[in-house]
Structures are given as C-alpha cells and as structure tokens.
Amino acid sequence: MNIEVYCDESYPDLFLSQVPSARFLVIGSLWLASENREPFKEEIRELRNKHKIGGEFKWTKVSPSRIDFYRDILKWFYEKKDSLRFRCIAVDRQKINLIKFHDNDQELGFYKFYYQLLHQWIYSFNNYVVFCDYKRDRLGNRLETLKKCLAYSNLSASVENIQFVRSRESVLLQLSDVLTGMAAARVNNRLAVSEDGSGSSKHEATLFLEKLLGRKIGPTSLHEKKFNVFRINLQGGW
Image (cartoon, rainbow, N blue to C red; front, side):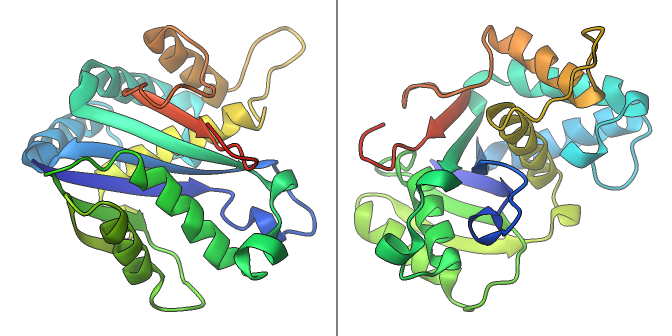
C-alpha cells in the first residue's frame, strides 16, 4: 500500500528558548492511503465552501465565527475511522539533555524525535511519502538524513521521499496543524477556561473532538490508531 504522511509541529524552538512558553514540544502526523488523497481533498473543499472558509485553516485561526467549520472538519476526520489517522509525539523540555545526547544541537534533537514519531508506524511492504511543514534548517540535509535512518531501520518497507511543503499548499497539512495544535494545547494545559466555566473556541473544539473519541486527549498505547499521543519516556520505554 502507498501511504502519505503530513507532519506539523507545535513549539518547535522550545528546547533553546530562554523564556519557554510551554513544557512539551509536540510533533504531529496525519496518515492516509495515497489513493484517498484526492477524494479527501475534495471533501475538505466542500466543507470549506459550505462555511465560506478562504485561505488557510489552522489551529491559530479557530475562532467563534469559524467554530462550526472546525466542528464539521473534526467530525469528518473522526468519521473516516482508520482510513485517516493521527499520531503525535510529546517531548518534555525539562528532561532534554542536548549536550549529552544531541551534541548540543537543538536541530539534531528535533529530527531524532521526528524519527521516533514516524518509525513505529512504518509497516513492512508499504511505500511511504512524508510531507513536513516548511521550516528553515541550519543544515540543508536533515530530511535526507531522516529518510536514510528510517530506511535503514525499516528494510522491508520503502520510504520513498521526505520533503518540505508550505502549509498554504496542502489542506491535509492544515488539518494536521489543527490536530497537532489541539494535542499540544491539551498536554501543555493551554486551553483557557473562564471563571464561569466557559471556554474559548479552541477549548470548545477540543471538547467536541474528545466527545467523539470518548476520552480526553492524552498519552495512549502504541496500538491506538485514530488519535495516538506518544508522550516519550526519555528514561526508556513507552
């Protein structure tokens, strides 16, 4: 089977920030069969037209005026069952030792966690293409190195390509952004709730998805296929 993966991240510069705004870096990924790409894009286009959504949709744009669209697209994501899956990795900045394990290189550490995100869901006899939200790397070969490492550790699968794509060019990458932002907000306790118990539009959208999933967004087992949250244990184990 040919598989496509659309990746985004939340708080990517967290490791080196002098004034960190969160505790967990989150890297997310949306997985689907290549044959579903065009039908899924058309269905998302129909939802955007229904709600008159122009430009990009993303986590930072969740607002009261757009909440109906975000509820609809989350419901659409859920109803695709295992044909559209999400996985993210949450990395605790308080437990990162960049000097000991990553040669004091934040960028190297970042891509090592990208490897951990992808490796566990690459299965034998499948072909994979990975699309990552565009970011400027200090070294120009990080994605090629990531591809080689995944290929060496998954000899019976084929990682055909890993490439950067700008989010404005891919609605599937935009959906990955929404789900990644939602997971990052939940694991970092960044969903605002007022004194009367009401929440922001982001909080409302998160509660909507959690009701569909039947659980609060948080760490899951490796075998959870729909919305998998891998809170990596930097002392070893799951």
